[in-house]
Image 1 (cartoon, rainbow, N blue to C red):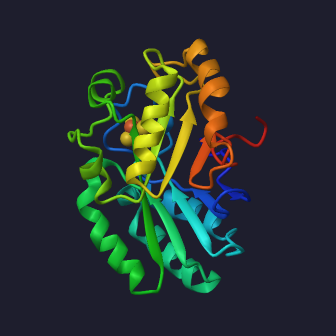
Image 2: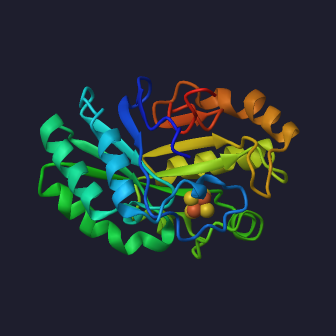
Length: 240
Ligand code: SF4
């Protein structure tokens, strides 16, 4: 997956630069909607080389940088983390966003402390996908063994939700977004797009989301609406 676009600039709603880095890979790998975990390598030296080249593109133009990788920030190698820290200092990044799976939450405090010591605020995003715990764990198999949204949100700042799947309705999607906004600073809503995973988009639910749900938050600066999983500018291919 080395032809992926790994650097982009988000100009609307919380403008920031975004980099798609590569680590040793998501250690959960069971989410039934996901093939993103295929973007990994066990070759740490190769990961470092790739990530440093991507991070070299960061300009610091907004003072905000979002770092994503399949899995959690803990799956990035130490040299890459050192380079992120160095780039933050050099490019005057004041806010740094990372992703973290629920099972890696114990590493968050140390990450916040590490960057706070350099004057950088860390914002952590968790993929919750749905606050309907039964749906989330039996259909999506997300791996979050906590039902209470407030307890999930306690350690995290932002969440991702997934819409456009069989079994969802306008009401359930609206309820998920409202719950996310009640407990998190920001919500990123991803419309399911076709991939190689077992769960695939439900066309009727996707149309319902676009027609009845998305317009409610089209201008809300706290809500990112991704109708394509490459809408942040990363994750596609140069020739896609
Ligand atoms: S959605 Fe995230 S946690 Fe789930 S398998 Fe994919 S990369 Fe891993």
